[in-house]
Every structure is written in C-alpha cells, then in structure tokens.
Length: 356
Image 1 (cartoon, helix red, strand yellow):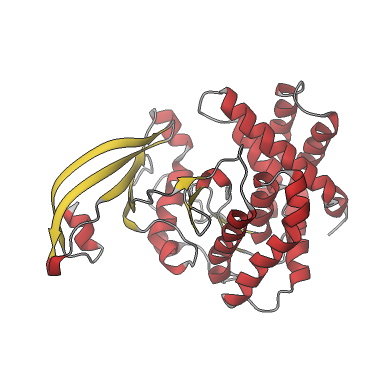
Image 2: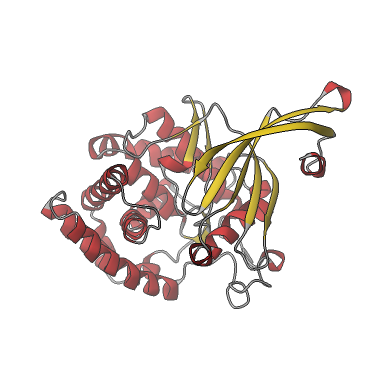
C-alpha cells in the first residue's frame, strides 16, 4: 500500500493494515482496507481504501474478460480526463490474459448506493444526470476515441478486438439477436407478473434493437452502459459518484440518459420531471463546452436512447451468473416495466420503426 500511495503522489508510509469484505459477488470481490500510516508535513495515509479484485471460477472469468478490461481501462485511461464524479483510483491493473484485475480506489464511505426498487428523489435524479454529462461532454464526438495506447492488445480478447468497443450498426445487429432471445425468455419467466401491454412493449422493443444503429449514429461519446441507481453512490442529496464500469463503450450518449431516467423513476414521477431533468443534463453539457446541440436535439436523443432499458435489463436478467433471488426478480421487473411505460409514453416504437 505504501508503494501504491507513493505512485499516486502521496508521500506516506503505511505501517499497519486490517481489512474486511464489503462486497462479494459472482464476478468480483471488494475489501475495505483500514490503514495506519504517517506522511510528510504531518499528513498521512487515507484512513481507508477499497480494493476490488476478480472473483469466480475460471469459466466465469473467461466470459467476463471484456468487463474486466473495461473497468480497469476506464480508470487507467479515461477517468482523469472525464468530469464525472467517481472514486479516485490509486492503482489499476489487469493480467495479460484478462482473467485477473486489481483496483485500489478511494473509499466513498459514508456514501450509500442507490436502489432501483426504492427509486430516487428529484434532487438525486438531478445530480445524477448532471454527473452523467461530466462523462459525455469531454469525449463528445471525439475522433480517435479508442485503442488507448494498445490497452489489452496482447491479451487473447484484445488481439482482434478494438477497445473500447464501438456500438456500430454491425454490433447492434448482433445485440438484436441476443436481446430478442432474452426478451422471449424474460416475458415467459415473468408472464404472471407482467401486464400484457408491458410484455408486448418489451418484445417489440427487442425486435427494434438490430436496426437501432441507424437511429443513433448522429453523435457518439464514451458511455457507461449501465448508469443506474445501484451503480451510483450518494452522499445525501448533494454528491454522487459513479462506479462499476464493466459496460464501458463508445456509443450514443442518449442511451445512458434514457436508461437512467426510464429505470430509476416510477412512471408518474418520470412524466412529471423528465423535461426538467433532460434540460438539466443538457445545461451541464453546454457548461462543459458542448456546442451545436440544442435542448430539442437532446430530448429527441433521450427518446432515441430508450431501448437501452429493455436491452440491459433483459440481457442482465436472463444471462446473469448470480443466483436468482426474490430481490433480483423485483429489481428486474421494476426496471423492465418502468422502461416499457416510458417507451409507450414517448412514442419510441413508432419513432424507431420509421426508416432512418
């Protein structure tokens, strides 16, 4: 830990360590390290840091190599250039075969993760969308936004795969096949809980994913891909930090915005607040320097990004490596039904059924 802190520019010496697990899953494990130390000029080591590492059986890790590469790559190559709030990274490394990774991050305690089931207040939704603009704006329509210093090129996954992945029409065509299969299983699994109208919306939305790239090619940025309440750490209503960057890609910014608002807010709350929240996101983009992008353009992109909700929710549910639980069922159902209602409210099926 001393070497990690010094490499990060802190002249400190760690003299003692104790730790406890703070998050254990099928794909990664996290520990809170409590540090004793001393430093120059009366300073010292941070009181605690969080260490996140790969976990799970080898076959699980092989399926998640791209996720490991994404998370380490974000902290190593993009975090310092982004304006989004996220825990400071002191150390980020992934093995050549992409089966092991280690992150050493600032401890965000006492911040607490949001909850998809509980939703969020207007104040929290506002700081979340403004924070999201801090990811998109610095990379807005940037050229050569990939192949960062050959990151991952020597790994098995990296030899023939550009990083970060770019969500182009070919990629969307493949995703369309995956989500169509997932939608069939999802709607069958939850047929007793889903309203027929919601099930129909989810199936129709999935069928549109293969051609989604034609409607989302107008602009690009770095996108989180899974920007939802469970991946946000809130300190009251005044601060938020984004975590869990396994789904990082180059894509259409409206996808992140639509995914967050359509899944985080209950339908009545979203209908009442979405115009104001999209405007708050747009205002922050402009403040960060994005030009030639009107508020009307932004709201249209919000509509065009709406397939992200069903896409991530149904794929995440059907192909999850974690055991199914009552809590996960309720979470996925909440996200899916909220997204389905947003899609209907905003006329998304007709919008995306039209030719590009």
